[in-house]
Image 1 (spheres, one colour):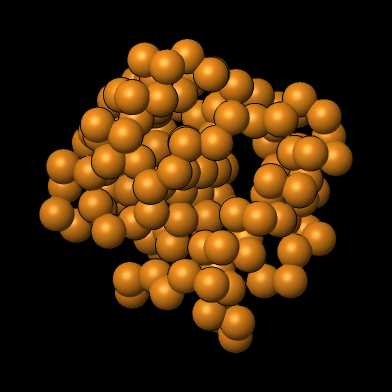
Image 2 (cartoon, rainbow, N blue to C red; image 1 turned 60 degrees about the vertical axis):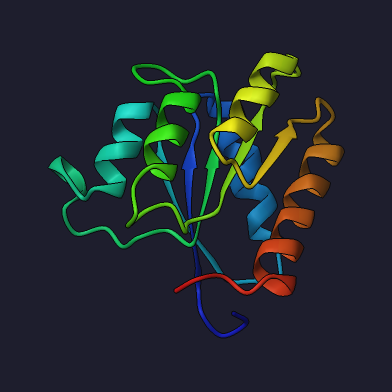
Length: 143
């Protein structure tokens, strides 16, 4: 995927986390295009190319927070993974929740990975770097 731009859908309502994520991907080796939606309904509208998202391209990877408005991350994940057209897109839960029920529910709904957001900025940037390394340099994604 080195020559292709990696398209990431970031589903996040926290402005600080959005800023940090964008900053972290700026420093990555892989060229990325990041689309941002701030609630679960917007995430589904984006993925189904509805409303203002009619002409968007499908993401290569989804970073999904659990605690988002309208539809929570679990509801969005369940919808994605039950749809034959969307289920091949890797979904990484990236959240502050370390609640075991949230972790179990995410994996029951077929998340590809569950990552607790580090509180320290340097640690957060490091996590994003590792996501980039694994998903865009080591792994071969479905087209």
